[in-house]
Length: 324
Ligand code: ATP
Ligand code: FE2
Image (cartoon, rainbow, N blue to C red):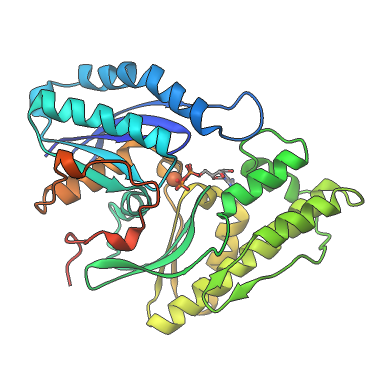
């Protein structure tokens, strides 16, 4: 089966063709803010100006008659951006006369990482710009075991980085600066049950900018926030009796986070699966592949139910493609 997938939840407009085994083609058009962070209206304007060209390039790479379904990111994400990719997806599906399927962006981050591993139901740490969740598959759903009580870890890193005068996206810049320090500054460590909160760290880090070297703040920020995530992941492994941990989402690129999770897993005899770097950030292939899984299990999204869903939660989706 060949499926065309369209991603466009926030910053990356991406179209891709996949089959069951591989990514056949992917074309990206990233929105880069000229100043500050992502402006939803500007991002949507970028998507609107580029979606036809991106789709045309992907369609030119194959015989369009070989495409058996159209998948698109239905949410969660920025409403104005979601509406552009949704409109494009509906138009292509109607033009080609093939089924349409709306994909949950969070689940797509997980499925593209699970692709070609033999992991059936690991504990997942999904950490990206707007989202931070610990999930586990059980009885046809990805259950959210723990999540952020305020903002996602990536947005939190980006927000602090902006205050420090670093350009968007801040996550990779904070990581680089953190490598230059080993001086720990106390920051708010907030874990409540299985949930966590990051906004206190942003405030403390912004306050510290007045008197502390930037690399010490970056180091302390990462050590504190990542320790909170590791604690919740360890509790999730322990309480579910599972022994596989999978990392997904854009912040999963962080080497220090990967290192901390792998040490925790090694100490308790669990397996840590670091993400495939090429599919960490938002990409069309993850939407196309998850759409392929959904379509091949009979799931379809009628046009009337294909509207944008900016608050789409992963546990709303019935997962029919995982056995057992
Ligand atoms: P979602 O809709 O899933 O929340 P997103 O639109 O934020 O996703 P992603 O590409 O999944 O997009 O993640 C982007 C985030 O990842 C940004 O906040 C960015 O700063 C962060 N990031 C990227 N690389 C690193 C890194 N090396 N260390 C920390 N954060 C990183
Ligand atoms: Fe994402």
